[in-house]
Image (cartoon, rainbow, N blue to C red):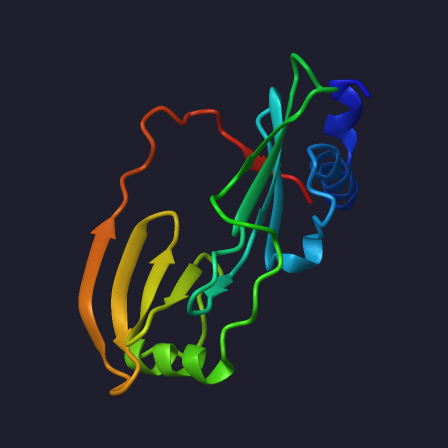
Length: 172
């Protein structure tokens, strides 16, 4: 398939193509249903299809699942896309207990998880380690299992990538 054909594809077609390529990379269990956020964008030289989990929960004594995948189709070699994944084992992860997510939202004083936020919750013996990431900030804190209270809270504003001026536009 040539790059102009890839550029003409709609988002749903690109997702199918990216899933096929992910399976060709050896991830036979790859399923877009594992991810809560799927985006496709292009700058005319590359087409990126990204899959991200809104909440990636890791229970006690388990390895984390892969929380994000990006398949990149490049104008120079459209038949040989590249694939990047976050560190983890497999794609399917258990759902975070609903009560836990509700408790975190209550402690943060929010009603809903923002469209731009991605949560990582790792269960430890006496606490949950929580990280909330979006394009402009990162928050991380501990949630005590016994008290349900937040401690060790930190926040960072993320600077825009100075090397990223490729002007990607979303594909619908």
